[in-house]
Image 1 (cartoon, rainbow, N blue to C red):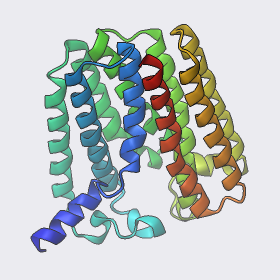
Image 2 (image 1 turned 90 degrees about the vertical axis):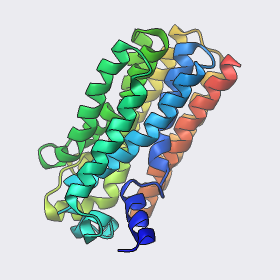
Image 3 (image 1 turned 45 degrees about the vertical axis):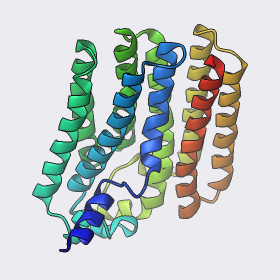
Length: 285
């Protein structure tokens, strides 16, 4: 394999060509940093967490493809992933996962003891998630727990503790993640049913869209309560209105459960999450 094709395979493995997944992890992390600092966070923490998001999202994609290397070839959307096609071998993927986690851990060492301790939980969750679809219909819940873990870490790094508002934001993002990853799982549902892969899309069945709406409503209510506790103003709630509007848009375009529409709804959550961060930036500015 040439150097260029080898790099392209690793780029695909780490999803560097598909940044939306990184954004879905990044925006709630920035929520937490802005909330903890009640404005612009410390610059070195901003760098640490942004770089950490990119590293850990890449690591999560690598370990996900490692876990699914014998499954992806049977799913239409994932047939051409590098581990499924043999472009990259399993041992190389594990070495890459370890290297990415090590780089992220080095960044965390420049924070504080509580944040370092929390980081071990984050790595464990990231490694655990990809294997859950074999044992439970709730891998999306495990993903939400893992994807949202940067929130308590950001509060810890900024203020040295994890207050209740951090956990409200955390649970809100867990609910949002279950919702958007269920849309994502709806894209693969027919393939998953054939090969026996579990997901919330399979579990929810005909009630999938109704449950997604309830999860999104729970997210909005928790963020509203958090905003009241922190005495946030109109710009923050404006961000929530944009988020709610995009949730309604997602429900409308997926009413026929078309695969492309479900994937579009999944991608749209990046904008919903970004709207909340923009609202916070303007609010504190």
